[in-house]
Length: 72
Length: 248
Image 1 (cartoon, each protein chain N blue to C red):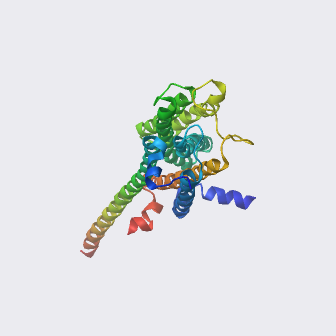
Image 2 (tube, each protein chain N blue to C red; image 1 turned 45 degrees about the vertical axis):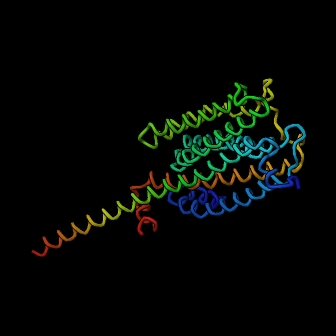
Image 3 (cartoon, chains in turn orange, red; image 1 turned 90 degrees about the vertical axis):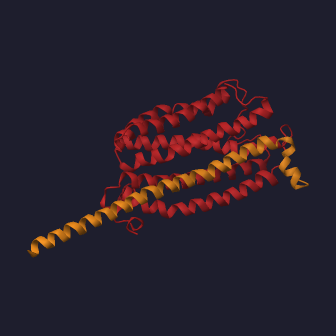
């Protein structure tokens, strides 16, 4: 084992700022990117669902109108 | 032979690639996590302290994978873009667009971790060294590709314009790679080369596992993004309207 204590591990032999500054930013970036992509996917899915509901309502209305007309 | 060819083209259509990508994504996340755990363990608990750079050298375990991926993703992006230009397949342009933001992120991380390495070792965050400057150009190529595609409304035309930019920019990748050999630079030479390596074996293993982690991550996140792009571009097709996730 290289490290004798957790404090020694976090101190990184005096390079703490540089080592953790590198690994930290990488960790944040690699965590954020999939979250943003997931958000983009949810946004497009939501607008597709809305469009579908709008289409269904439109069909219903036109069917009713059609039925009324043919019933007359 | 004939069968294989048909199979290949089948998955080249967005309609059949969309569910396939969805099935592959969890596997690549799993692999990324597994390689990441082993890679980080090797990086921090197995690889010995460096004789010259102390613990500061451990930045290598993210710096090198990010730099490799930034170059490799660019080559893959350019290959998809070129394929799209040559064969006019719909999926190729979507793949290129899906890779660009991840590539840009990798280039940014390579520069960022490089700066955090340069400061303690060279005494400066930044120098206009051949390798660092050409990596910065790579970062700008990614941003230029994304901006150019965003500026053109018709996605098919955006693909074509982006593809030309991507293919012209390919010349930069060998410049980055060989810059430490061609010019006398501040950036150290490559630590890994075929046949011989200047590093301790455990350091090398740590770097390779971290590189595999970054690789699997890039595939997973690019597949996630390509699925979103497919839905955006194919929003008005019947198959998208019939998807279960749209119906529910």
